[in-house]
Image (cartoon, rainbow, N blue to C red; front, side, top):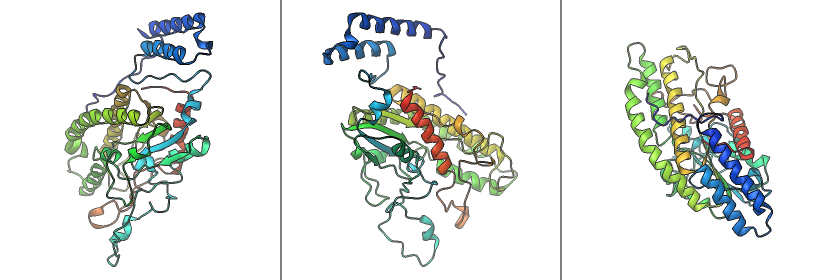
Length: 357
């Protein structure tokens, strides 16, 4: 599959990197000599210093923390807002917030009354954002508005499929100091791809692989989604101008060397391909984050050895039911509590020691 959005990070010592570091150090030294870093004036000195540093970094939306302020201080100085889809809400980590815990499986019962007011956002107490909230003191508290099934449109429009869900952007303000978000998988139609791969596996030998059926469409969608997410990331920065914005990627679902014996429902080559789709999606998210000037965290390496099929999986196994082996339990193929704890560790590292795409 094409990986047009993969971008290799320049390593220190490579061509151009040393020059950039030298120029940055020279500018910093110049400001020290001029006494601007210890100037009580603050305003003009701070602005001049920020302008000088950002001219070297050449990043859209570049900011520099205040004097003596650490990156973590900046992130916790106001309110933390957690946006996103099911990988943000904690689908599959259980212990869902009351009022967001509707279970679609009850719809399979013939005598279910199919209540109209229902919310399946499945915001879990174990979601990575909630682990981050518990590990830090945010001066302005926190807002958790991520929702299972959300797509990019739900950032600025109400989520009518879930009762009481306003646009996620409504949680953002000048007081927001940190935003995290995992978003894009639903826009890519990945859940439908997984379902089709399961059906494909049921057909047995001789069936076309999922890759053959979906590869071109996903490649095209990644190109389209890249441009949309760049705009979305910039919108977040506009509505939360004082916030650090951290985009969190998607973990691989399966072990790197899967077997055809996995439930006899998914071909090994389809499992490998779905891992590749996750990698391509993350590469696109990283490229979009870089273009918009926001931060990015990739959980891929942390999940190595913890995919479905491993001895210690951080991804929920397949739970099927209903007509046509529809995925009745939406927690399937989502990180469990251990997986969210691992993602939270990565986000915490990013908060304390920022690294950019």
